[in-house]
Length: 615
Image 1 (cartoon, rainbow, N blue to C red):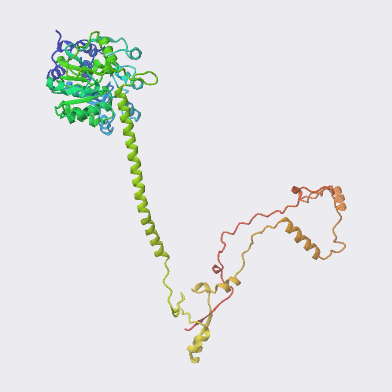
Image 2 (image 1 turned 180 degrees about the vertical axis):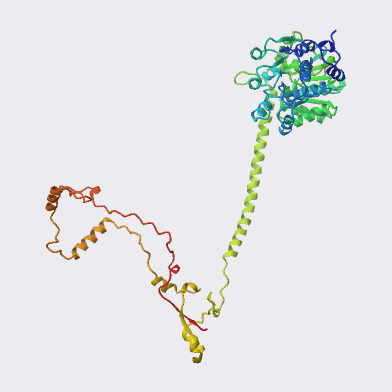
């Protein structure tokens, strides 16, 4: 009989394993731990519940502890589900409580900020799911270039969940030289191709084939109709005095329905599946482990990765179409050498699945007698393609359609309510705007009798003189004795407040340029004809020469520099084209001067108005 001490494990880890309750190593631990400590690649094929976490966890801790604590990620453990990642991280923390190594777990479904903070502080061992690992690596928040040990757990489950491509992406981020430990319950062809490219001269460890479940698990099957499964579940729980039970259903809708039915019957229950948030799933699992919940209803997502101590019963409310999944389901009980019971319910439509499972086990499963025997023997319904329509799937699809219809109805009602509120608010808002505009544009009321015009106040010039009105009014109010003291002076109108705009504008100088107003060619010809008719005849010596004389002079002397081109003789019978007509050349529009005055009042007036000094 081998012991953990005989496997070459150091004392700090041995002490932690003893405190955790491990006494004797399992078959896979006996074969995998020495090879892992020696740095060899390991290919492990073992069923669930055989101690694989300890088989690869102990070699990782012992090899990294010899090098001391570091800041970089030196060991990476890749798992398919969040629950399994959390379980592995908890086990590693228990194994390494006497060491100075640090562990971190990251997974999706929750905020990444706390996980990023832990990575920034430094970690030696990282346990992760593929999605969140690639997400953080793409953001540059973690570095996998210093990984020395890589563990791929539940590889066949990765293939079933569609993670095989993500696994290949993760492998490309790792260094070429590293130790790899590969564990899978089954080895399909796709997994074997990955093994050939990933492992180098591995040590093959096969603890037990997947088709041979733990012998200590008591297995039974109940042939029952679908409508009586919940009632039969409650009856067996009462007969067996079930302390805690894990119930597996086919669909997420079925898990919620079973949990509701059990809660109505007085059994504390909760459901966990992919539609639940990670926080809700962890909370339900925590309550179940602490005994606050008696039944935990789950889909196949929890078939692997759930490590619950003293789990006495596992119920298969619906059989799985994949026979291997049955092995993983019942493997949640009977762990660590303890006894367990697995009871499955089978209706008439699930009989083909039961035969496949018994074929895998190579033996029949004992039938359990109960008070609700099978009475409905109807052939399963098939679709247009001849495929069997599972009632559970059809019910789940119908529930999903009803849920979506209800959501659409609520969205339409919400939008209609918002529209009504906006319509109610719109008139009041418009009314307030109209009142505001009326208050701004309302004129004072017109009095019935015209009021007398108020007397104009006298204005004062900047130089201190008063505008005393007209000269006659001023002389009438002053005596002739003081006339000698009066002086009449010329003042610049720009210095005062009142300017004689009309007179100043009339006498102001005009701009030095005028804009050219183009005229049509027709008007130009008319003007030239009128000009020719009114023009006086030139003297004989100044009369214009005939065109023949001009052409003869040009032939003798040649065209003058800058002179116009000679007139070409044209056919008089030919109508000139439109393009040959005379055109008016419009000169370019002159640019206004930079210091152009825009108003006549800005110029000094030519007229000097008279102002009277009374100094």
